[in-house]
Length: 193
Image 1 (cartoon, rainbow, N blue to C red):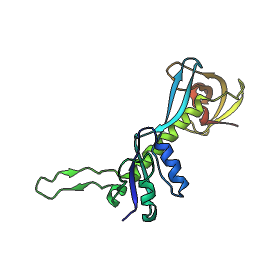
Image 2 (image 1 turned 90 degrees about the vertical axis):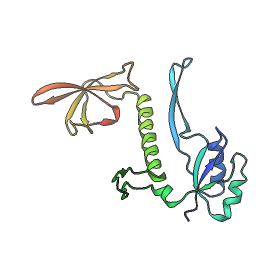
Image 3 (image 1 turned 30 degrees about the horizontal axis):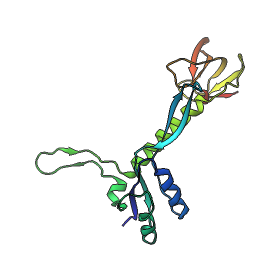
Image 4 (image 1 turned 90 degrees about the horizontal axis):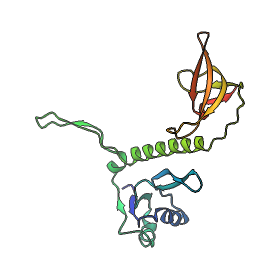
């Protein structure tokens, strides 16, 4: 038995239940999504956390704490025990019943957690880039850290913000084969040389 449970909560109260479970000394996981909303009055986007899957959280609950979690105010019903295959997923396999059809893999909680955390990290990078204040001066020497031109020296020209972009990008000039080439790169993909 894994002692890992899926906990159903009241909609919008996932983070309150998480705080109460943390106060008990346990380590719950609420799948989070970093979202933004444009506020007309402020003329800017405001970033906030919300539940990736409303009303759902996961936690390893030892038997001694199960009743305390069950009795929390915003927990709905009994926490559902997860089996090991729910956590690890099921790999793809070949059926042997004559049709020889291949059954696709079913991801588990581990793969779901990795995917959600990767998406959250990408959204955090977009948030950081959207709040980025350009610290470079025109003509300043930079080095590209990522992409096909990683390791190349570049010269900063300007910060460019287009309407369809989530955040401003840097326009830099790179010398490739002796010719200057202009590129637009993410602010976190360059460093001062």
